Image 1: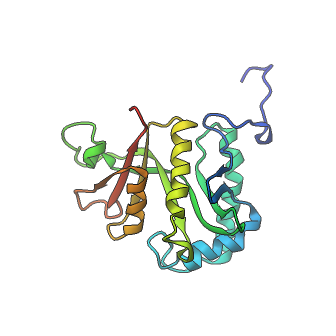
Image 2: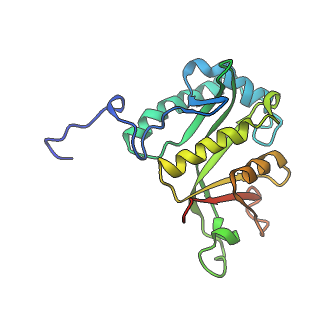
Image 3: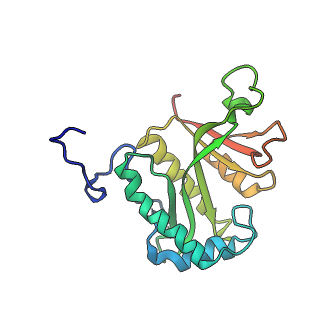
Length: 216
């Protein structure tokens, strides 16, 4: 670093390309950063209401474990911006009318053998063994009490638009399991091309939604 150049603290950073993401508003939703005060709400949504869902943990995550995750998430907003990294991490999905947290949405780093999928294959044949490549992933989860109302798609569309317009990314992906019809419906609503892994490995890479930026 130049001797005359002062290093900025996280609080001094401006919202710009590949830095801190501002709150996003839709017709019914506010997508904002989590705060430490959101612990009880997000613990209820992710670890209790979604415990048996595909996006959940399969068992109730203890409140103290969720508290550690929330602290890490909250600290990550400023630290990622400070390092000029993509705005990875979960955001709260909040009903504008009531202020209730009904889910989470966010960008996640995805590392998988995406070259196995025809839409993402760079050559005629997939390498063997397959090589892993990174993609910008889109994550969404809505409380079962608020599903089938279009909230997941509404939140995902706002994130998609921010990714393409503000971050200027070339592509978004989303992943799910074969039996998650709701997640695949969101992918279709986003305009994603849905690909199924043609190979049995890895078992966790089953369905991938792929969406290229307009004009690419």
